Length: 347
Image (cartoon, rainbow, N blue to C red; front, side, top):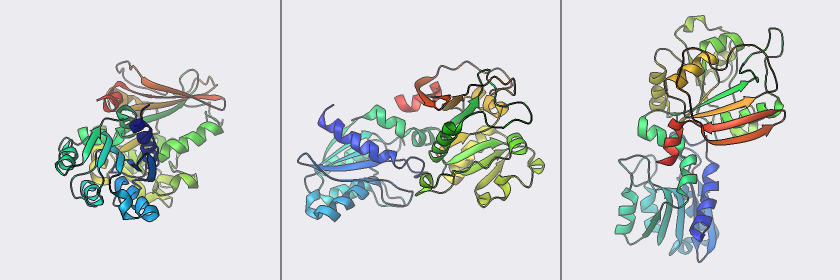
């Protein structure tokens, strides 16, 4: 690993702090280095707040003064923004600060903006290096990249299943298949996402809350949106937590096309990432339509003969990629990308 990669790895760690907190913006990190010394770092905390580059430059100014930025190198995980939105362009901020070199991992996924920063920076005499730690950073940016390129949010399906591929036990038994360690990981997964999707049938049968319950995971973010996909809203139980708890204003009810519902929340609510916690029919429907980008499966030590994790019509077999295995108590978690999701990490 060369020095540029070492510094970019630190910027990537900064970016990871923003996962699940920045929609509709991406999670981005930045570090400022001069003469081989780290001067400051920053990450984008929330839409409407300063971008990672400005956070990092502010940290440098606070500890070292304005002059320290002159001649420094900025390492940022995403091409600096070049247009004025809710915040001013980071390209201007870098130039005004006297930064002499900018290194970024990935070009902006928005085709209308990709490469613009490089042209603007170089025209003002700033050296630019791109593509450092690109593959690792694409994984962090995958939610944002999919929305920018397709208008659809990233979709992750979470399932806890028995050894015989079932998601329920016999009537009268505990509804939980997975153990405490797995349930704790589910809280982490929810904190990565902007919206949790379920079905009307799941709401009627299980009455889930679909909230983040670990306080530390809520720091700097709101509870995720919750969306019930159903064509029979009148049949939903009025005492369902999604409809009457203190976060009921974060619950959306949508019918009709699954794809239209997903496009709608991306456009109307700035959702970059969706986690699906539902039954076999909705899981199968999403897989059949090719809308799933990632799967997380908790394999539990049960044989139950209950309802299948994926039910309904046949859909094409899937070749999972970038597979991660994790032991969670007595359970085994598999996390992987579908071929569809991998395209946004490999382009």
